[in-house]
Amino acid sequence: VSMEIKKKDARGLVLVLFLGQLLAFSVAAASFASSFLANLGVDAPLTQSFFAYLLLTLVYVPILLHRRQKPRIPWYWYLALAFVDTQGGYLVVKAYQYSSITSVTLLDCWTVVWVILLTWYALGTRYSFWQFLGAGTCVAGLGLVLLSDAKSPDEQDPGQMPLLGDALVIAGTVCFAFSNVGEEYCVKKNDRVELVAMLGLFQLLVSIIQIFIFERKTLEAIAWSPTMISSFAGYAIAIFTFSSITPFVLKMSGSTLFNLSLLTSDMWAVAIRLLFYEHQVTISDRSLH
Image (cartoon, rainbow, N blue to C red; front, side, top):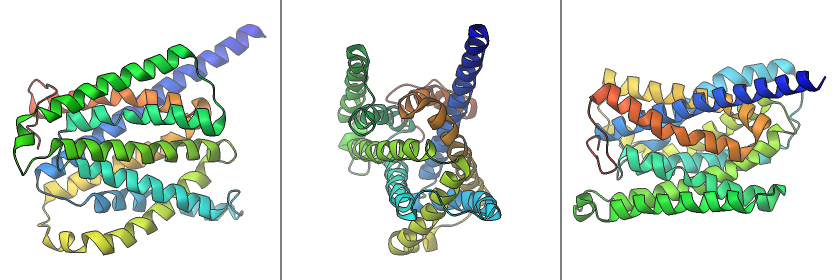
């Protein structure tokens, strides 16, 4: 019996690790699409997310309606999570207007630190001294990214503001941390389909309102092209994949391991850049911007 339990645990761990890498690749693909659109001069982060939320709504809401059951969690909790997550996505995508894909994907790792603090305080998760030490080491390493951007030649250019981009990313990671912990709480008391459907629906509504307020003129000025449309589609598919897999990983492992899995998105981002641009990537490389 103990051997069967160990085999089951091992299979579960392998599945979590595999899904974690799918998540990391999805994040890297979305990052590349955002950076590519920024390089084309497109500054419409809410519109990018809109297509992803629309896809989630079209796929998951009909499934939820077909079940004909009332939501197990009050709608206003989903609205709150959707609002926070949408703002996080807006801030991180906006950061590509000022920072390189390398800096954004590295600083996105701040989410791990905030999640550890939130789960420790809100969910009662306990961590050892060494785990806190590891998180502190990560923060020190990410501080080097800020120092690198502060001394970057782009910082002297009024049109390039990498430190502003870095600040936007860090603010976005705070939103993502609240969203991840809230989703973990919901998915452990609920099923995956309801979570994804309700979040996608409310994220769609929030993004529509904010697009009407903030991005209406930007959309009117965009000169649409097949390359631009394919980049929007690529971003939407990447976020759809990410949002569909996220509840599985949160339910099986929790927010902390979920965000630790995303650390390898930096590796996937470098691999994608090498595949498309065939050049060596360094921390100060800003050729995509």
